[in-house]
Image (cartoon, rainbow, N blue to C red; front, side, top):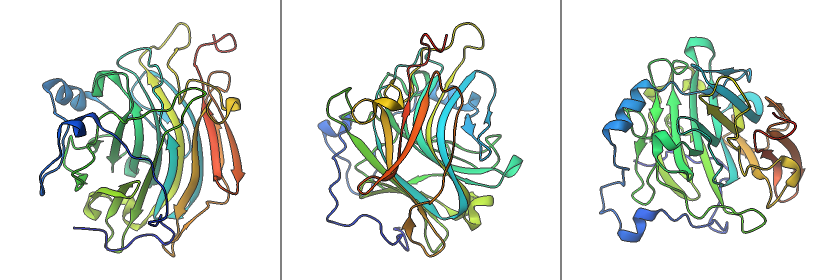
Length: 313
């Protein structure tokens, strides 16, 4: 099965994309008809059952079941059928293994208990994925994170087709401060059959079946891009968990984390600029965000921060 349609303006053969190296690929490849799957442990299953995914809602108010929540994101409202972004990849430090720091975009439909989301990006989540390096991930829900949805392939939902890319595996290479920058290009779109597809660079990773969703069946009402982190610490000094590169947006290219070439898929199945954005930062002394536009990067923003610092005690 392949997409029945692609958005107009999606990257062509002339676009240069950076190769993504995953450690398992150094030892071979998957035979035809099979896909790479990160080994699932008993601990993974126990954590998956107890997890309630934290999110930034369309109103950009945090929700979730405890812990300290920080965010820096931009959002565009409208009738959308997909989105894309180039995002550079970092290894932010996470203070507590139970916490996480991520960079992603959200495809959002509905509200309240009928909230549907598709989420894709990279995440550092030691207790769930193991290690302190960024992992490629997906997430979905159709009931506001209550009883449906999961990361990657830990429940029925997302169907993987790619035999080259494994979800939940470390992304290499990663960006370095004042050094080489490495990015991934993620695209999600709804085809003519109503299926939602995921592409990494030019590689179709897989899809979410149309029947999986309710509010997203007719398209999204909001697309959001940004960084988010959660720490289990509820009191005391601010967390030292980093967002993005761990540096503020003012440090810009090679210093701060960024997302660029922000596009949405409109009713004519065309990738285009959203035009206008709303943006919100939970605590600008700890993490911040700066929007911009240029000829090459089009709509973009720098974001991130170190967490605890003299202005964020």
